Amino acid sequence: MQRMVIKLENVGIAVRDLDAAIAFFTDLGLTVAGRDTVSGEWTDTAVGLDGNHANIALLQTPDGQGWLELFEYIHPAAIETEPTLPNEIGMHRVAFSVDDIDQALEIAARHGCHPLRGVATYRDVYKLTYLRGPSGILVMLAEELQKG
Image 1 (cartoon, rainbow, N blue to C red):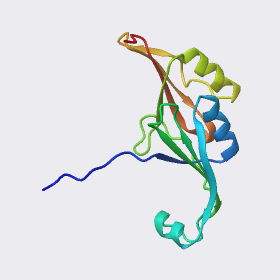
Image 2: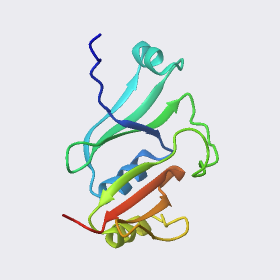
Image 3: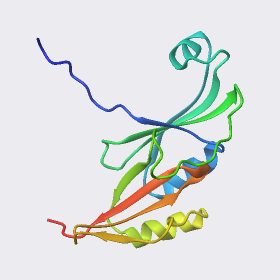
């Protein structure tokens, strides 16, 4: 049997404030590829919510390989939840490689986002940290130490 072709399309994240989330991720270096407001039968069917209506933005990483799709729900109303913990089952985090973690953390701090604990070094290969981004999103930032 021939193997099906599959590729990761994007990571979708529901946010409380679309403009704040866009500002955070674009300051980190992503670019807005498009914005739209979606509703109608096709979105109800695709998402599985009656009356689905949302403002969305599609953001792309500078290398052109990674995509985030951010959703700000108009209807049904967004449901506030506690931010996930790193050890909870389910959608965990979104991770980015950066060439300067200190600069990335300065940018995040301007948005009120700080590491959960600090910056760690993994086997002299990466400096990395988890932080809470907009709407409590867990974001991992990693800087490769041995660039080659």
